[in-house]
Image (cartoon, rainbow over all chains, first blue to last red; front, side, top):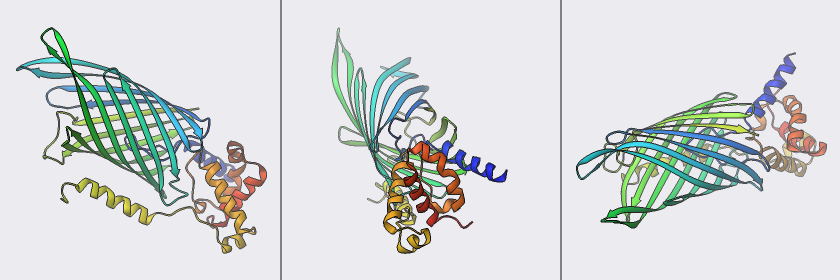
Amino acid sequence: MRKILLLIAILGFVKVNAQDRVFNYTYQSGVLNKGQKEIEIWSTLATGRTDFYRSINHRMEYEVGLGGKLQTSFYLNYGYGKSVVEENGIQSLKNDTKYSFSNEWKLKLSDPVANRIGSALYFECTLAPDETELEGKIILDKQIGNFTHAFNIVGEYELGKKFTPDGTRLTTENERELTVELNYGLSYRIKNNLSVGLEAMNQNQIAESEWENSVLTLGPCISYSNSGFWVNLTVMPQIANLKGGGMELSEHERLQTRLIFSYVF
Amino acid sequence: MYSKYKPAFFFAVILLVVIGCSQALYIPTFTDSQKAGISTDSLALGRKLYVNNCGSCHSLYQPERYTGSEWVKVMPEMQKKAKCNDQQAAIITKYLQARSKQE
């Protein structure tokens, strides 16, 4: 009986950890096996900018393993928010709705257990009606016993159009922005299917060749997996604007919370 | 200059510490082959099969995580999932057993 229970425990351990993603903002090097598929539903609540601000962004991701350590994903992105804006000294409430489509490619280069360090290259392209976004990541991770470390260097280039009323016409202007981001995640496996940890993110925005801000956010994360699904939650309060001091609340939120639910099939 | 790049410096230090302390999956030696009772080349093949066939579905485990008999028990179920033949599964098992936890 004891042996049977032990076998169930070992098999269960391997099965429930088929997906090893334990962070929400920091990526790990793992890719899906050839033909394996996953549906992920992302929901990010962002709140607390200058004056009133709250937004909820959703992403629905369909992930497919292509073999040869390559994986691709397709995303449908939908976001809505409300904020107070001020123009010519007059405040008004602004509703914002965003739709976009993204395609992601991820190539695993080395394994976090088999090699000294796990690594992967990541590329994502997002198309929105008024914006194009290109994102590249270098992903590094390592599993040591029950600890998982992950570190990402991210470069994000946004090219958008700004429309301004000019009499009876609208004038358009190109807007370019570069964000350089560093992510670090540390997670500890408490049980076979439960991990807790911390995620840190440092976002640096560069516009018109000027380094505008360097925002540090840091918060706890929890990950739970079971046969066929996994769910991750991260709460990320802004800690500081490392360039300029205080907090940066015009472009960044005071608090972000992200929940990802995934169904593996 | 230091304060400007403080976050990057901080992350780089963490990264170096992690790499410095990290352990990779073992490369078979002559001692391992003697313990397993098969050649070093066969064990090296076992490592390759383990990384490619098992690591594509889930995180790999260090061989010392389980005892030799635990590895034997888990193998039939995993063999089906990884689509390995009996010979490949046997070589993977030998590789894992050579550095498994003491019974």
